[in-house]
Image (cartoon, rainbow, N blue to C red; front, side):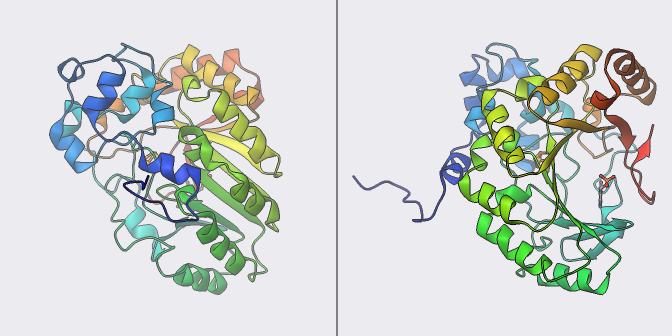
Length: 334
Ligand SMILES: *Cc1c(COP(=O)(O)O)cnc(C)c1O
Ligand code: SF4
């Protein structure tokens, strides 16, 4: 039988799973035994930033619960249509920090490459939902502009790959970058900011592990999980394999109303992260991006939650509570 959409010969299994993601809110809700109305889904919000959820991630959502913390992160709701003063499309000053095509140089010694605009999951609270990805990715010109910029700035010793999700690029495309970086003697560390090992753990395949193992620098992989329910056995396996390459695994989360804004949820997240070999790094206050106001937790509550965590957890499981403020030299503690 001839498949309807034959995959290129070299396509990896994760790429097929990527393409098979759920894109229709109706389908997602029906898989969970929920109706469209009950959840107050917004068609305009879904048109502006479409729903996208890998099936394996949807399988971790609780059946019949429209308040499920994983569902809330991905479902386009009518609240997104609300216009809220103070919420804009460039909340963290990315436009001013642009140093080249897909290159952000905000902080001393670290440069961030927006490797790609693509993600396996679309998170409703995301600060990059309004980013002009079309011509703005660092990979677009074979990484040339970014490599030239780094060569001209030898004080940058850490390169961060972010996005979008850098692991949505093929491993060959990532290797093209690191081959170029290996010619720059200044580079001491490589960092990946990715949600893929959490939302599509199949991405952690042998080709990716071989690439990571071959890199000449210490590597930090900053995962992005917001709730312990995201971290099932498949994610634990992916993390074990990533750690086998020598990479240091960290996690950043965003404090989100209705998702993880209680002490038990935050403590469970840190505890579960440690069980799978990941240390909590940052707990971010939400970036004030238009369409996300319903996720915001005010600063007083954020501090109270963090104090509760402080009382409950060992210091090494306590993430730093931070906010990104345009023009600041680094993330600011609250
Ligand atoms: C957040 C961020 C970094 C990394 O900051 P760390 O505090 O080192 O984790 C680097 N560059 C940009 C543009 C960022 O937004
Ligand atoms: S950049 Fe990260 S938070 Fe934003 S949509 Fe992609 S995976 Fe989600």
